[in-house]
Image 1 (spheres, rainbow, N blue to C red):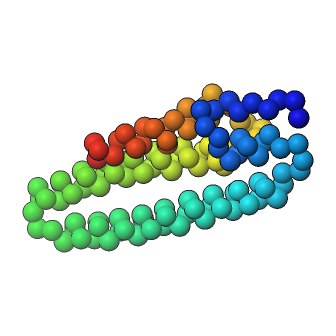
Image 2: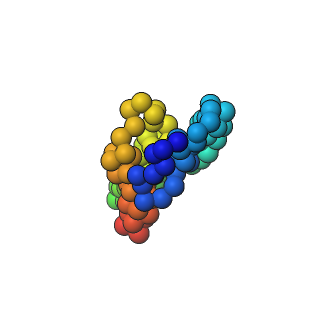
Image 3: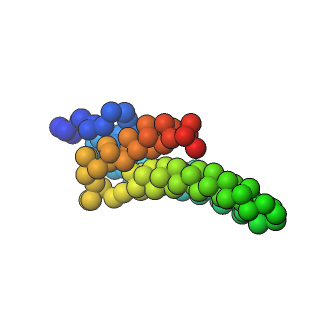
Length: 121
């Protein structure tokens, strides 16, 4: 327990667990389980919502309306995929391949960049 510095701009659960001096197996299991539930359930809801949206768009008669609806959906899905890919990459990355620079970059992507893209969408 000599290296007690978190190389981030905020405390992520994975970083805090790595600082523990005792066995963190149970903490890691709980962290991965909760990240799975908190990541999969909303993602499944998003996929279900978009399946309903796409089926509604296909029933539209106006080609211009379809184009506008699909472009809005595409920009939103790109932000959602950016958020999920970077956050899952940070939280589910293994300790052996963990790079503090890449983790900090990914953390900035899902904490700063994706909220800034919401007004654009």
